[in-house]
Length: 258
Image 1 (tube, helix red, strand yellow):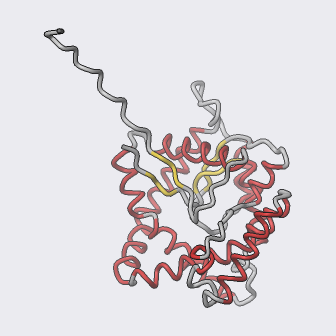
Image 2: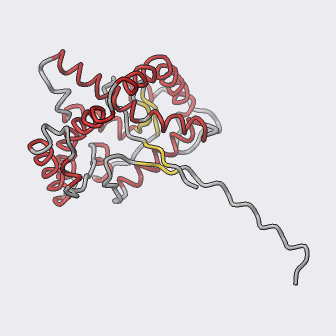
Image 3: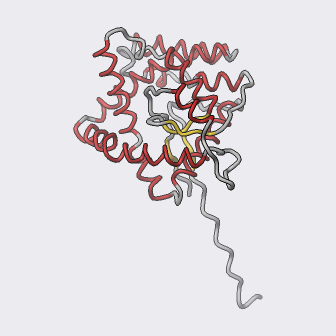
């Protein structure tokens, strides 16, 4: 039986340019995975991120989930998803996908006006599909190769191309561009905590299912990005990755054949 893990990226900003510089001088082991030549460096960053998550982010997200009613959490998630649809609309247009860009425009206008600023996802109820896109996907559509897999401090799985795309995504994020610093920081913190809370059950499942969490996360991320950029984007609000099924047991031979 397959179980699905949500791999929605945790939002926020990092020194992306510094990360790219670090990649250039990072040593690789003799048995490095061809898709992950920076594995020694990446595993170190992954361990740092895991420690930070266990010490700070997961406890805060757990408390948020416990004290915040489910309808309120859903409204928070919808609000930030509505904002992200604006940037998805831009990227769909840049990728020459007019139908998807129009869907994103209709989603934003519908949810903003009829969904009380995006708190209610009226567009999904009206069956207007969601086409989530970022600038890393746009670069891939334009033909730019992914480059090495890399784990970014605080932000997790990425690639050289997606790291460059993240820098542009920062400029397209309406919350990050707010001139009111206290409001901007409060909204970014709420978005981060809400996203982590949405992933609590998936994280527990990953802990139980994966023998090597680093390798599983890497392979899931690379598979998802290849699928999205290969022309098969998902239209659901969040992307999912299926855990592989266990191999079926071999049939037991009949000791008394007829």
